Length: 114
Image (cartoon, rainbow, N blue to C red; front, side):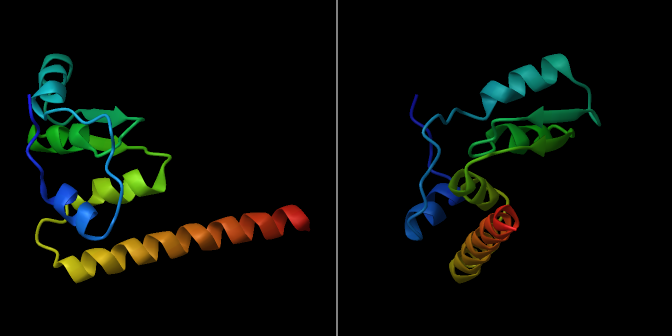
């Protein structure tokens, strides 16, 4: 089954972001979310990737938390929820995320040296 490229894919390509390699159709997490939870329940995805599960959970009236350790994947997943953002604002968002991540790494390295 071919996956349709969503806005997050188009924007990711436009600003040279990598896309999560293990993508799947929204219907897959919807099946399990409907089977295992009720509207208003919390869905936690500890390997969020492109955040298909978060999108599905929100669409089904569930609260959700997404965790992703790879910055590029986390940035790419945010595009899924930025449908109305112009491309230049998406690029600024990416720049801010990368700068914040670099600042945190620098601060952590400084703390280790102390």
